[in-house]
Structure formats: C-alpha cells, structure tokens
Image (tube, rainbow, N blue to C red; front, side):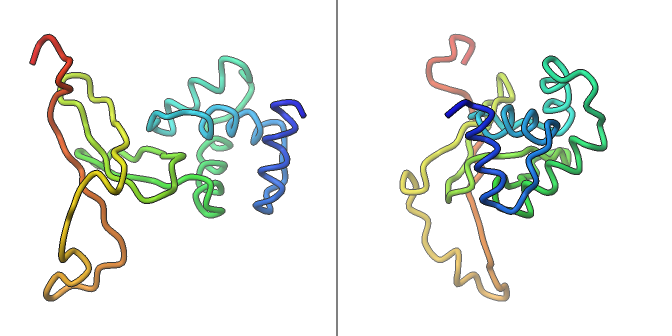
Length: 138
C-alpha cells in the first residue's frame, strides 16, 4: 500500500472524501509530532502542492477536527495549534524555543480536576512551561 493510499483509506474510514488537497494536507499534519498552526500547515503543504488555497487548508483542518483526526489547542496569545495526538496527554512548552512537546497522561498525578467545586469539568490537560534540561542556555 502506498503512502497516498494509506492516507486515502484513513480519510475514507472517517467519512472524508480523499481529494488530492485533503491527502496532501493529511500527509503533513497527521504524520507530525509537532503542533503546527494553520499557516504553518499551509506553508508546508504548498512546498509539494503549491496550488492549495488558504481556505482549503483551514476548512480541511476544521473537518479533520470534526472527524476526530486532529484536535485543537489554544495557548498563550490565543494561537490555535493542531495536534494529531488525539489521545489524553499533557503539554510542555519550551520557553527557549516555543516548541510544544507531548507529555504522557500517566506522567503526572493530578487529583480532583473532575470534582472542581463550582464547575462542570468536561475535559482538562496540564500545560507546563520551562526549559528542556539539555538546553545549554538554561
């Protein structure tokens, strides 16, 4: 099975018609460990598919989120990023680089989040900020 075919099959399994543009977008955003913004996805996809439009990328990302292939996260400054890791996990933001790293859910022991007084908690995650220990400038 080719890479293109595998992505097409994945999209079809989620009820998404696998157009050439959607496959090109999926090839980038579903195979990255990063947390790209829509504009970063657009720039990356245009390297191999220069005719893709901004509206197509934004609409496709929105569709992928609706179908459970991606999730969105908003961090400081209201910037929305897309995360292909849709399982439960936390995030660590490197203050030196701005990179966002996934942290396994079980790495943290947080208690009482679901029972927070005065709130109905539907979901939650911890966002940590700091520097990687191997950062020579830290």
